[in-house]
Image (cartoon, rainbow, N blue to C red; front, side, top):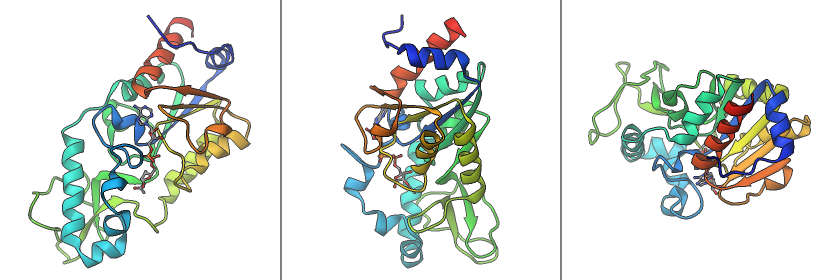
Length: 247
Ligand code: OAD
């Protein structure tokens, strides 16, 4: 039995809608056991981004940065998508669904979504900084320091570090989806990191129906047509339940 009170406006929109964008951040994976970046227990409270998540840090100390990503990779391998990821997958039975994620944990793809634009890269992918050869989904032994390509170049994670550009193709596709959707849900993101946070802003400017789902209010809560406060793993299955019964 659904406990969530879905507003009349959102109910109507869900019944009419054909294209839905789910814009997600670290909060959607919190219930899988992956720490968020900010707030209580946030990664950036314990580690400094400038020491780990940028190219010059990697060049200065490749072993340290590589092992940090090995550690985070292990967390991702050991975890599973949660009820929120699986609910988004099920929305595909009713809508054209585009997932735009800032997460690098690959959990939307593992849950089974077909269109996933990764704005900040993917921790399971790597490439050589010299010859650009790809080492996607290849597992590397931990403790061995940063691996080298056959060309001698360093292999780095395919993650967007501070000061780097977002992957152009993914960002353009995300913008197109935001402009053309009927509803955009922004889920589990603090909305403070740009240009990614510009995606829900764009949907709002284009007068798309926008809904935020978060355990707290955020710096961009005010832009949304509606805000649902609570855990993504509870709210999304409730919204899906409504769709299953009524669409
Ligand atoms: P943040 O850690 O900044 O924000 C996580 C958000 O999730 C917060 O607003 C929480 O209130 C919310 N939250 C936590 N648990 C939740 C739950 N169970 N259900 C719903 N909401 C929940 O993470 P992001 O916004 O994703 O970039 O951070 C954006 C970027 O900052 C990341 O992609 C990363 C980081 O630096 C790069 O690494 C390039």
